[in-house]
Length: 108
Image (cartoon, rainbow, N blue to C red; front, top):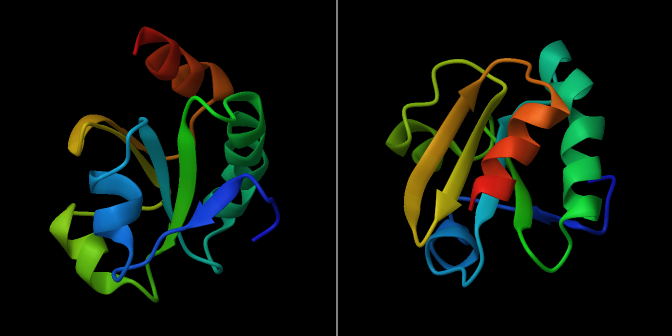
């Protein structure tokens, strides 16, 4: 991944990195071949930088991590899910603007 502020989230570490996290977690479900996902990537990286220490930002490659993608009913990508205290707080489907994510994060 392109940024040191991003956490690679997998089927194996999802429980620890997301559900047991002490801070809110913004998870980007994406795939390498998905052009809208690639277009969203700089926004996700900027959020990760801007919210360092307040929010964990991670990415799940849906091709490599099918179990977690199925569990959260990821049927279209990009999908970004905001988790708080191990629960889904908000779900964004499709290409979204930075302000949409910031509004949701700032509301926490």
